[in-house]
Image (cartoon, rainbow, N blue to C red; front, side):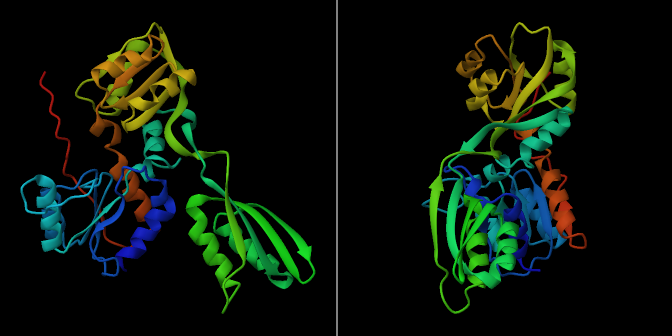
Length: 336
């Protein structure tokens, strides 16, 4: 199996087009056409993780966090990032990152957090806007049933057709990340000539794509019990929090990683508590004394992402060598 076959499965689940603009996702190091000898999964890539892959005969590492974000002018080993990149290249180990694109899908990182909390009635906290396109295309009338089925399978919805003689005019709505699949489906029904179509962006939000999630606990919990529940569920060394005058907690919002930018959205949604990581001092004031604001740690909030990726790939490739690394990459230690 080639590395790009594994990448396609990951990107069908979490399209790279859903990543935030600052992010760096997809295959970062390695040949997509190389034969994969196995997959090793962790939250972060480290030199020790590459050593583990090499020892196991695995040539593809999949992590949540990318090893670098912005452009780099030097790869000379002077920092840990360049050392890891050099080591991966020398060891012929490919590096793949599935980061904010996996944060933004409704079956991704935040869904996993919700399951750890035991939340129900979960939905996206801040759905993304401008992710839909309208497609107008033309087809021969006798191809309509098959083409409609292919477009639906590729992600098209609300398909409307109108006959214009021997030609049928099609209109449909599609998520922007499905554009490639939709156009490929059109091309299959236009052999030897380019398909005739028109694409235009439309307004509206995608309720299953966006930042953070919100849900409710099956029953209200006393505040102290809720804090203890979160600490246990995420094995936190400690929880920093801004208090709020709630005796009980039931409606909860959360965002894996550094999600304090969603504090106001959590308040507007009527959450009793908001859970995230990496909250800086002044951001604690954003709770406005209305919402219990918890910083459980960046690593702690996302640590189960490795399991999420592992289970997804294992379902897709049940007989392939997919391994969950036991290395804990959290750089933060707690003294108590």
